[in-house]
Image (cartoon, rainbow, N blue to C red; front, top):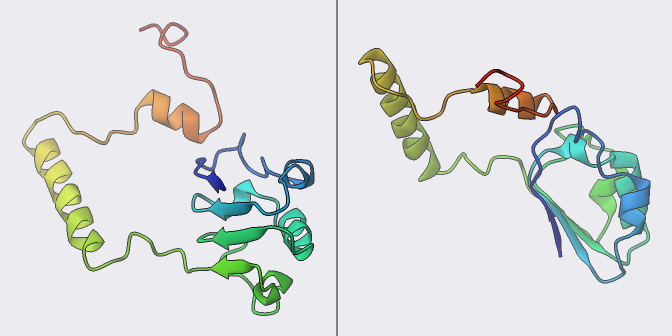
Length: 135
């Protein structure tokens, strides 16, 4: 089983294309629960169309998948809506984290989920170095 968990950055966009998909051995399963744009959708549909691997996708590019898209017709593909965080248990937890973070900020405490230079560089597909940034 191959599970894609990569963040979407300029470097990872279309990171998995025809060449990489052709390396997947028959009988394997490919799961993408990260971002749809990491995998080339045309190459993915073509590879799955051979019928020798299984695909399970919580994400796709584009989202939502167009009604007539051929991937919807493949019997070896499992699709789910990209709403993993929208659950009865997940929403109160997200709200609690958000309120806690705002409370920390407005009371002058260190916040936990900052967009640091390292995080921003990663999302842009850049390499971050504390030495190059002077500290």
